[in-house]
Each structure stands twice: as C-alpha cells, then as structure tokens.
Image (tube, rainbow, N blue to C red; front, side, top):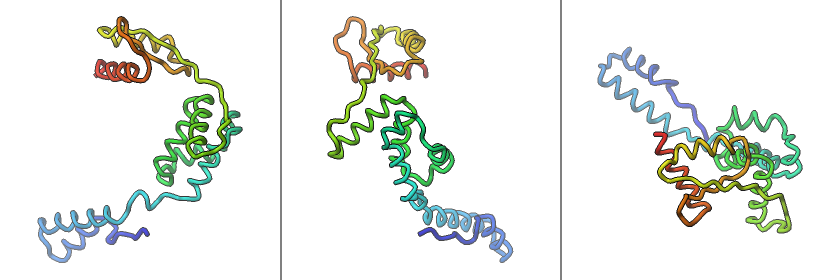
Length: 184
C-alpha cells in the first residue's frame, strides 16, 4: 500500500530543520534521509492496475479487432499517457500487436495462443521475407541500400553475406550489430 511521505519534500524538511537551529551539514543529511525514505516507500508496481491490464489484454487478443484495426481510442491513450498503470509485459504485447502490421500481430497472437495450449488450427498469412546480400567490408553502404529498397515494406529482412554460407537469424542479427557499430 502506498503511504504519503512526510514531509512533502526534502526542502520542507530542510526549512524545518534550519528553523530549529541545525547547521548545513545536518541539513544535507536530513535531505538525503528524506529522499531515501520516499524512494523506499513507493514502487512502480504499486501503481499497476490489474483491471485495466486485463481489459487491455482482452482488446489486444481479439483477432477481429486486430485485423480491422479498430481498437478503441482509450487503448492508445492508456498506453501513451498512463503507462505506469500497466506492467511492462502488457505494454510490450500491445506494441507488437499494433506497431508492426496485421500479419505480425496475428502471428504473435497465434504464437501466444499455441503456447497457452489454445486452439491449434489458428492460421494466418505468412509474413513476407526479403533476402539481402551484403558485403561485410561495406556494411554501412549496404544497409543504406537495403533501407532504400525495403524501408517502407513490412517484410522481414534476411541477410546473407557475399561469399559466405548461411542466412537467417544469426547473420541478420550480426548485420544489425555491425551497422550500429559503423554508425557510432
């Protein structure tokens, strides 16, 4: 349960202490203790609202709502302005369900349904994949070319290095890592 910290601020504690005849060193110590006590009493989990979390999860798990893209406006408002009321896992699930297109949202819903032992014959369209061949010694130029070609597409990029065997998650993750290092 959340309890109000008293005094309301370290400045109020400092003023009360100074009025009582305390010196500056004691004043700083009092401020540090008040701040520590306030931080110790309030946790982010104290603000999580189970009812709103369950309601948002029901909205995100509705396949018809996902396909039509007609989720209620309160869902976006809740996640944007009152995110402290929701646990991180719920916010991440909302992000994957709304930000990456219908095919990926349905794919995530299918994976979640199957992992919970739900309906196994839930079928959706495949997510389109684009294979890109890049040169290891010129990663930044190749990344720019790939973004120009496929940046507006919702396809998943798979990277293959010229002269090397292998494609898929490993080389693709390495490509993004090398690109990030080159940008730094």
